[in-house]
Length: 247
Ligand SMILES: Cc1cc2nc3c(=O)[nH]c(=O)nc-3n(C[C@H](O)[C@H](O)[C@H](O)COP(=O)(O)OP(=O)(O)OC[C@H]3O[C@@H](n4cnc5c(N)ncnc54)[C@H](O)[C@@H]3O)c2cc1C
Ligand code: FES
Image 1 (cartoon, rainbow, N blue to C red):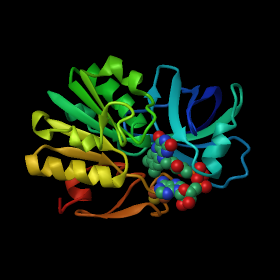
Image 2 (cartoon, rainbow, N blue to C red):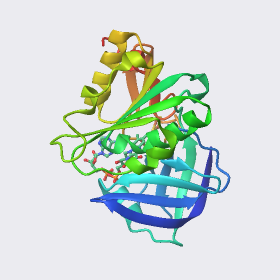
Image 3 (cartoon, rainbow, N blue to C red):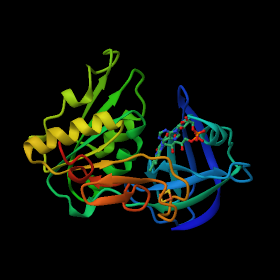
Image 4 (tube, protein in one colour):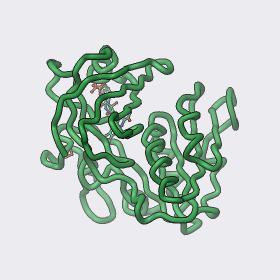
């Protein structure tokens, strides 16, 4: 884990309020489900903001983010050639090394981007990957999964594209060796409950407001079946049975 400054290569709006920023990797290690803390270099903001790895290429890191408030709005103003400050890669990601057979990835909204690098790393290991992507209305990033998945299932809430309804309606966990999920907590709870009922191991990626991002301030601690855990250090990816133990 390192703090470094690097150049913005591109920063493009791909959908309403959603951007993809590509920056120089500077040799930083990075794996699926981990995240970086980011801030525009020279920003007046005190804290960096956590953004997941969307894609880690040999020389570049790609981040997909939605404008929520000050920090993400400031990131969206960066142009090619500007400098961004990064801390990372941080956290514990998905257990790619332990996987074999068939894995389902279930993402909702801005929980979808980290599953792209996850699909890439799983397929590189010979795991069969099916992807379940839930959107409110407009689709984004679906084509990014095509090289790294066997099947892609898409849902939108009102049926503008794909299945009409929730992505969990499409999932049948019993056909898989494991399920990885990232997205709104209500969706991950449902996925965790379906996996528990069918005895399929499940991992979920938790979100929490963060200050330090490195496990020092305890500000992101959450109660789990194994005691208090820091989302930034012990997670963000956790086995679902310790995060949602009653499901
Ligand atoms: C491990 C991790 C990975 C993440 N990966 C991504 C990603 O890949 N793409 C992406 O778009 N976003 C991601 N996020 C969320 C992102 O970090 C926040 O949207 C961002 O920090 C908001 O900062 P801001 O300065 O724009 O908003 P602020 O000005 O800080 O906040 C604006 C409003 O949003 C609320 N808010 C801010 N952050 C959160 C949060 N984490 N949970 C609940 N409410 C919040 C605040 O309370 C406030 O009301 C991730 C978060 C975590 C913890
Ligand atoms: S953000 Fe400081 S311990 Fe997690």
